Length: 210
Figure (tube, rainbow, N blue to C red):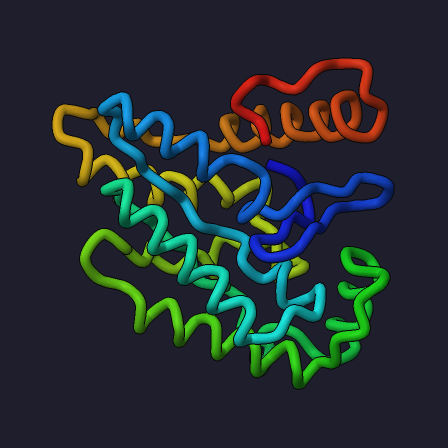
């Protein structure tokens, strides 16, 4: 968990830096649970951060592939959100520069470079799907005005879709439909963790937060 987090490289927001998902320990923790006989279900989402940090396409796909292989060795079911943004249709170059300056102020990535990388990563994900790797339904209609983050009013639809897909591979589990208030509660909980655990560390993170 953490805004701006990367899979391949360290990332973060404002004064907060998070280790990459590849190196933060969550995969090792999943391995320990698998050894105890627990089922591992992985959600791969927010892949675009690495692109904005200037990580090459080759590095991103190699990193993701190594994660997929490690999860496959654990017998995990892996659910992947493709990057929902279509830069050729959803965002102008001027809007891209504004969003880049807000969310990735140190990034020098150009509009066309980002467009090519998004298309290529999504193509890689489509080619990698199958077996224990499942592509989740599109979430483009759930994004907000920045076309990157989920809308506070529609984000619960995206997560409900993800939950429904995961439940299909968990016999005996009941599908719980998320509502708008779930999104609001989650948003404020995450903001509280960001401020009081990460920015101003007066509270300890939960054991399951890496």
